[in-house]
Amino acid sequence: MQAEYSSPVGDFSQLEEVALALLNSPLLNTLEQTEVALDNTDLYSIALRKRERLKSLITLFRKASAFRLAILANPPNLALADPSHDLIVKTIWIESSDTSDILQLLEAESIPTLIWCTNNVIGKLGINGILAIKHRHPEYLFVVQDYDNHHWYKMSIICMLIGDIYIPSHYHHPPLSQHLQIHPSRVIPIGSIQWRRRFLTQQIEKMITAKRENLPKGVHTPYNRFPYRNKVIATLNTRMPKVSFSQDQNFHKLTEQEKLQDWLTAKLHFIVPVGDDIPIRVFDALVTGGIPIIPDRLVASLDGLAIPRDHYFTYSVDDIVEPTRRLEQWIDMFDRKGTDGIISRSLRSIEHYHIDSIGKQILNFTFQLIFNTKGLEA
Image (cartoon, rainbow, N blue to C red; front, side):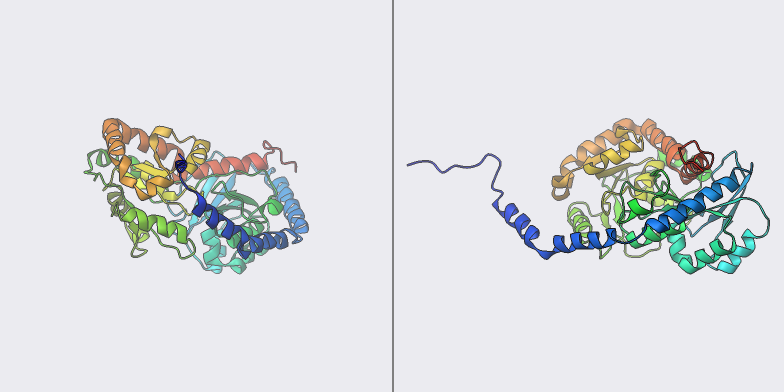
């Protein structure tokens, strides 16, 4: 009797059934139809007018030699940012969602002005609030940093429409972005926004001496829109109880010292992103001397940011169900790097990925565009 054949790679018939069911469902067809409908939207005329406005602003700004930076801050977004640049002679921070208050502060003096804000600030001010500022002062140049271009597509489109310079934070292209991009694209990450740079550099000794636990930590905000992510976190939680969902939104209300203490409780920080984004917590882990554990699919993105590969660990899809199988190895590597590792990760990340450094990158890119060193002809 002939022996029954057994495949050395297992039986994938059930997986094929799931895949075929997905392909035969209306979901993908609906997605494709939506993409076609969006792509058929007439955005060329809008992009053309935006391009003409940007060229006019560039002509105007090239006549100036000094500029003011106005940071529209919505804590923690940019509230602790203090970037420097040779062409910036004054920086003002405006923490208000009242358009009248913002205009009063902006109009206190007349000087060529760059306004730096994030998508969250635009969401809080509202489209009408931002447009009121732009209509009253068309000479202001708006630099919009989009923290959520990996999932908040509607807001990303609004950011592209409002911003003269648009800075995505992730290697992801929202729908329609190819039609509204009017200058060379540049991805600049969010970086660490929880602490002032000076505060962090003064806390190195505390980072070194902190009693960190071995079990990885990773408190994530649950989002109904991302059930797969929620399932990953819930699965990890069965083996790593400190990888969990937050019960409230109070973290941003903590003091810098309280936030630091929270991050110093663990050696390792498990990161579960929404998609292929690079979450803020990657940078928070690094600047506080810890080691983030990221999905292996993000390695190329971290390579793009020149983050050393020995500054983070990776996990694969099978590690989600068995996350502890590599835990001893991760802990051992953290311990062997010891004090030198903590100092190296912290100081290098503060230098390159703190919000001050991110702000300087944004300013450098903006002035490169203005002064035509990136191929944008005025």
